[in-house]
Amino acid sequence: MDGTAPEDLVERYLARIGLDAPPAVGLAGLQELHRAHVARIPYDNLSTMLDRPDPADPASAAMRAASGARVGYCFQQNAALETLLTALGFAVSRRHGHVWTRPEDELGTRLNHLVLVVSGLPATGNPGGHWWADAGLGEGFAEPLPLVRGEHEVDGWTFRIGAGFGAQAAGRPTGPAAWTYHHFPDGILRGVVVTSRDHSEHAVAESHRWLTTADESPFRRFVVVQRIERGVQRAVRNLVHHVTTPTGREARDLTTYDDWRGALVDDLLLPVADVTSEEWSGLWAHALASHRAWDEAGRP
Image (cartoon, rainbow, N blue to C red; front, top):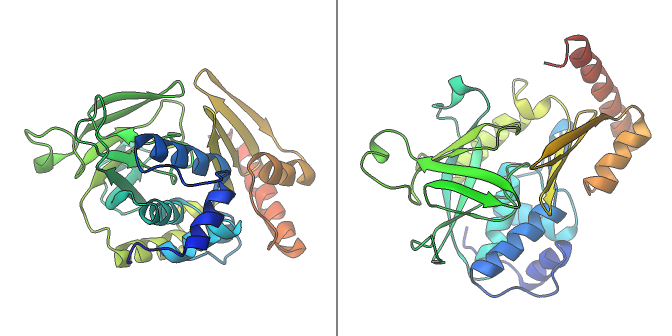
């Protein structure tokens, strides 16, 4: 990956996220780009649920972002964002991310998240100038977090960064090489462990292949679409529409096909021009069946 992008691609990408011109390279510009991306380009697994997952390489992901198509989930979202930031002159590097939802999985080593670090932007409280940019958590932070140990508030949400595990953490402050992250209490995910384990393009491609094609993959269970705008986390998970703020969560069942499709397209801003009527029918049937099974099991 050479970090370059055609000028027209950058212009179209910026237009997609509602910006008329590129912001200046600096912390304010990074924050503006990050907020615009997570508000206008939804995190989604729809192509995976359709059994035709899109590639995760940076060029393909950025092209989908610029063309108005679906971008996808973490590997794809952050590959696209990395391409945009690099093309605009930001210093971006990658890290290995392991997202966990159960305490027993916290120390796992599977690469299931691509982490971006933007460097060279010192600020008050962050003299090292390293920032964690992430458009791929689905529910997460609207603007980059400083890589400084402690609690960080964004739009009323509190996110916590701690030291890395093991030898990497011994006697060392949190830095751009390794850290732990604890999510807000009501979130779906619980945390992320970030290290310098193998996060090469080959490693990402192999993990992407497993996550989008393996029967055991959590990304193949039901449709998930999420975006973050002005302090509100919006999501459709299977047939439940969630609107979450720092003070509470509203959840309602989407009981008809029209309500479900409308929530995906109108509230979550999901591009669906390529989805056929047959594919919609199959998705709806799958959603109904899994929702009923979940309901009968007591909504665990």
